Image (cartoon, rainbow, N blue to C red; front, side, top):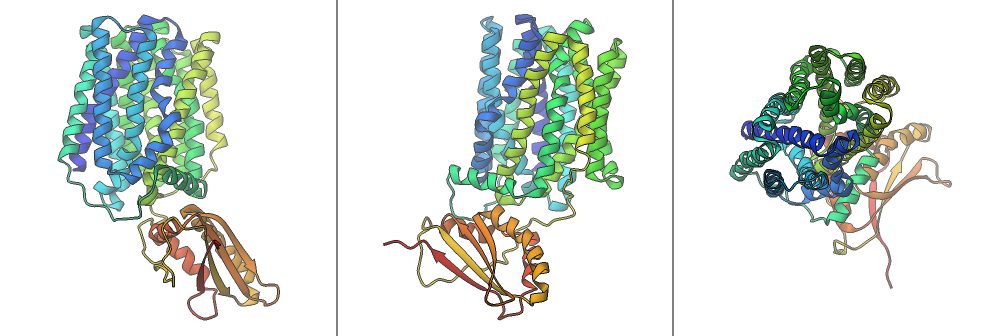
Length: 511
């Protein structure tokens, strides 16, 4: 099923890149302003500001297969309308931006669910390779799609490219329809609001995601300048038509294929941190080259190097994100990652488009290249998660509590209290060992956490944490991972009292 979805996604992505070429080139005809051309990119990624986080929450609480079919159909409809209007000659700059925005809405709803299904299709040890293959497939489409898009625009017009994009979604819809997805483990139902809050809380208290988000945001907001300005570079600086622009995008795609072929070998000799830092610097050098080069062939070579760097950075960051996330929160946390990525693309399109309008294309590319070198230096020490470090598979080690009463799922708040007896001399070590436990409790649902030491009895410690309601506390039990078990067992190993540490549950008293 991974193979068939991979092949179908290549077909769809070829159509998407044809759409990209057609929209950007059509805008250069409808409006000569570099700012308006850059707004095409902004319209594509702007929906993430509106529905990026809800999209991830929805993907975690509904059937992802059905959601993907719905989003693919919505994009088919938007692309079909855009193609029909363009062929009829009734499209204008703002209607082009509006329908591009509609396609972006469908893509935003689609992206978290699409990324979250990959671990369902392959075993965990093969996940980094599957993610690299997805990137390879995307970049195969990037290599072929722009060239085909330029050819389609030259022979059929932009409207023909849009119609072909609409047809390409049928391949994905067909494969998704035939996918017999395994039944999910039943858990307590969540609302979209509570699922969003849980996802944001998880990311806040998951250090493995922090390095990914900082590196991704700082890289993309600067690197987006090349993508936003390339149509104008092709037309104004290189004096090329749509086929030339398509070939330049194809060079980026070809470089990305090279990067996909190299990234697995590079991971064997370089840490994720070093790999991303070097690739970020290489993309900066590519920008600097574009600021000075005038020959089409040399620009194409610089873009191939940039494409390889772009792929290595994003494949490595995507792998670090996906392998650090347990299944229950994967789509939600990935939606935050995609929010940062696509928001940076949208904001970068505005910033670099405005700069190019005021100062010119070449000075803007020069500044972008220098900024990327600074980003590579500033983020070099940010740590990234390795897929071999942490096992995020469910552990089931946290037994379900036994109570004298039968609380309602929404009854709360709930105070959980755990009592430890520690050898007094080991108190500082125990306190240090409880810090990962604090992050686990907060990440998985606690709204407050504290560790208390008894002033009247040395060696007696009380861990307390508060959860919004009983259902959320039961979800905490289901969310525990093998890595969590390791940290909790280390902290509990300091306990010398009756085994195991005594756990009590308290509910807010009501009259």
